[in-house]
Image (cartoon, rainbow, N blue to C red; front, side):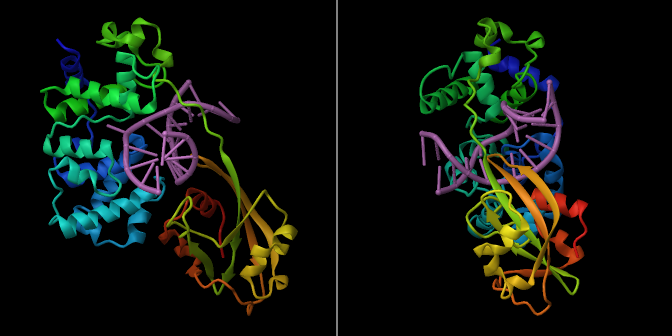
Length: 351
DNA sequence: GAATCGTGGTC
DNA sequence: TGACCAAGATT
């Protein structure tokens, strides 16, 4: 039996039961694929169920408010995914009569859908012969065929695609793609793969050459950028000021308290005298800063050091910024917020 | 084409 | 405990 057939046989015995495998509804398959980008199944699963419950079809998602979609996404990370999810739902409704096109290239053009996701939708929903090449598949191909030990990234990616295409040959695209991904996810795992029980280890380049631990080749770690956010807790009449992060930066389209950024963790005196702070208030000298909380949140490429400050001020103090939203203290949770704000709200009573 | 974009689990 | 990394896409 060829390797592909063995993997399919393995899949029939070992496949997990997952909700998006019970359907061929392109909407549900698309939704699951967007959620699962760079995200573990255990983390994405409850989000998938919530989305299906709130937005059972593409039309309901398209007609929802951005804030609602983002709030449902809150905690999943990589928030441009949520924005692109919403965009694509509107395109499907307005340009495709609420139906995903059974066409790889048309799917690929949709926002938030790259080569992997387009192949996943094309094969899982329409059984079209496009091999999925995700992290699981690359890891398996790298080990089994010894790919990625040399050559440019471009040529390595090309080899992955070629090998996946060869393996798929004339097998059922939907079944084969699910099988090879699941094999990577459960058997050929990143760390300490269970080679002892592997049914195809004798054909595996990495196993035969004692390279399982060094394939695929790891990319050198990137340095994290440290950033220092100073959040201001401003309260009046039982309401708290928040703002939307609209600038082109991390956590875009989420909400947070008014803030200024500094080069490092600063004292209240420094902050009060800073230009950014003084631009916030008409009478900055009539304000008082008291530390409320300090949290550190590690993101994929940045470490956020968040200082929360209670700000006391004259009731008639004017604010220079008009884009602040005054929200009743208990209603902040209606807005999508970053993980560190969520964490803060759990531990600290605002207002 | 390298850098960027979150969060939580694992060892 | 800190580094690694998980069903990638975008610029």
